[in-house]
Image (cartoon, rainbow, N blue to C red):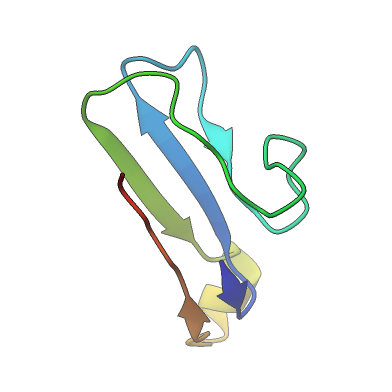
Length: 68
């Protein structure tokens, strides 16, 4: 995930808690990759900080998802 002032989180029944997929997340490997622990349904949410939303900012961001 690159681009504007946003945070990315992953949710799923197979996870104990949400996973921060932000650029500096310790959950990502050295290549910025997170491998899902099991097959199933997951949800990715891209969140904008409230202070930025109140200013009517519209950040641009880019996300790449690979499923193998």
